[in-house]
Image 1 (cartoon, one colour):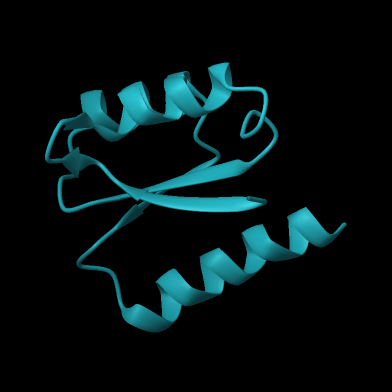
Image 2 (image 1 turned 90 degrees about the vertical axis):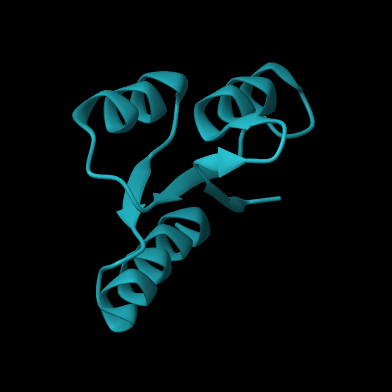
Length: 79
């Protein structure tokens, strides 16, 4: 995968844990990972970015803004 969008709250863990697992796996280590969350917790955002996420988006943002950010990430994959 070139781009992975992951929710922070997962049934079996958190998004930052998944990002670390993706980074550790040679098959997915190069993928850009963006997290989406409903919380504005600085701790959650910092954990995600420290784990290797390139973006942290918020569920209550306007849909068009979220899609624009995903398109920008997709462009960086293409570049």
